[in-house]
Structures are given as C-alpha cells and as structure tokens.
Image (cartoon, rainbow, N blue to C red; front, side, top):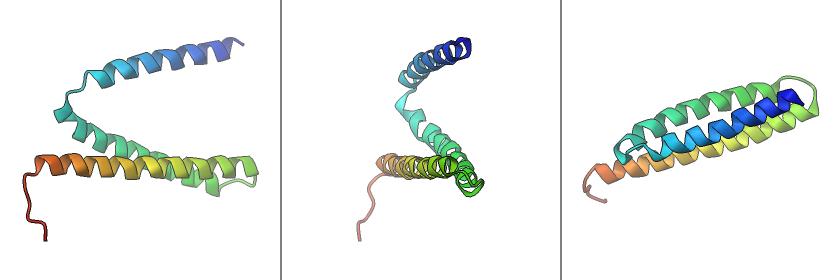
Length: 96
C-alpha cells in the first residue's frame, strides 16, 4: 500500500509540474521542444518494438503492440505539427 501511495504522489506532482512548465513555454520555443519530444517518442517506439518482439508471454506482446501504435501516432502527429509550424515561419512559397 505504501509503494502505491508514493507512486500516486509522484504521479500527481508530475502532472502539476508538467502543466506549469508547458504553460510557461513561449510559442517561439515550441518547435524545437516538439522536435526533442519526437526524438524521445522515437526511442519509446524502438523500446516497444523490442518488448513486443521478445518473450513468449501474450501480455507483453499485446502491451508492446499497443505501445508501438501509440508511439507511432505520437511521432507522426509531432512531425506533422512541427512541419506545419515551420511552414508558418517559412514565408510565402510558390505552390506548383
């Protein structure tokens, strides 16, 4: 019970700290930070592939497949948002 309570306490503190940090970031720093977050999600994706591949237990394969799906969505969405934000700063281009 004590370990669960400590884990819950750390989780709630992480939510508050994360919210405070995210709300204080100016828009000009968003694109570089998004690129860093995409790199971390890429590492998560590689770890999820290793977990899904290894072991004979069905639970680890299912959780690994879910982690692969969510990490892929996160990486692709992050790159799309970053590309769109960089396009806003790039100026007008000829659309051919």
